[in-house]
Image 1: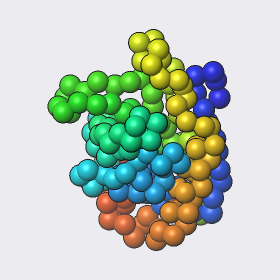
Image 2: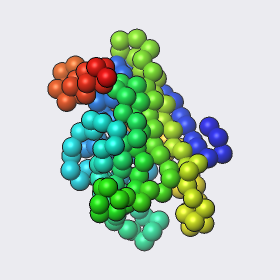
Image 3: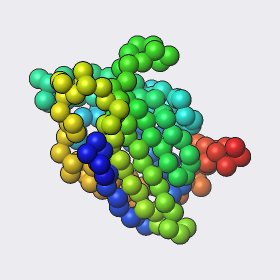
Length: 177
């Protein structure tokens, strides 16, 4: 952890493939979220590659009960080891405005059915103009621990990734490259 990032880690008794499958499914992100801001995936499309944009409906109490949308671009997609996205806004996926913060999950297999998960929120690339209006981090650091707790619960309740066609396909494709 630096002055411009927060990280937390947790070890769970689930394979890295299963944890990655949960993270690559934006329909699970509301249940994972530790802040309560994420509402729902707007297209429900599984994440399959870096550069892909997925949109999430959001709600933030601190801004007078504001509903808004985030367009997240996948920056890292390395099944089953790492996934990260850069939140932004805009109507055109090719011309999004990014705030400079990134969410990243690193998965370290510790055997067939045990994984160390590290969640990092990094705001080191946030420009000063945004920092003048938003305090970073914009949430209590405990929210990262909450997110990993929720992720662990979801992953432990899910069948293994080998039984999930989309996840298995993504993992196989990544291994071929």
